[in-house]
Length: 119
Length: 107
Image (cartoon, rainbow over the protein chains, first blue to last red):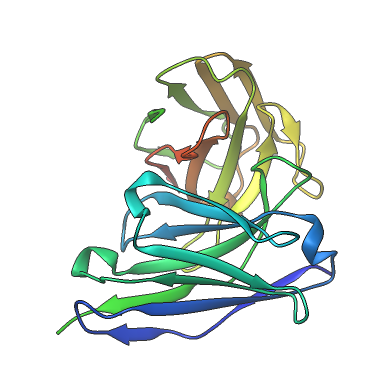
């Protein structure tokens, strides 16, 4: 069955960077875009961007341009999201999500990774 | 960016009721609209895709309708396990955007 397993919770200081991993199994990893969505405590969902694992192509939300880097390693079916210049506003649960088909229908989600930014 | 506005922000209904949640897009998004259910501490779950298609395994008492700018999620025969927050999401244009959520409780 399809599984997306994310790395564990992180505590970071302001200005630092964080790298979250998303290890996938049960499907053809290069064949589907992998998206990242975050959710601040008690808030809604915010799309950050996506990566095409087949060729490494990325699209980022303008809000995160220059601060986010999404990568993937097809040898281990794993995607990564690195966010730099962290502030307290980046405290959130970060999710990876696999799409259904070609479009951004988020069919499978990771369990989420809580990133806390605090001095 | 396309703004997605949900209403109401919260509602309370009784077991067996039918509830309706509305989602309005700030511009025409055709049928590029999904609905998700999120329970506390869990990742969202896809319920409806392409405005009206029921995701595999989702009970048939969930239904979606609409196109263009106005969409609706309907839950019939409300069950206790339906207590959750529901989000709509457009994927017509990047950045893909979500509604602010509708919290559903049981009376």
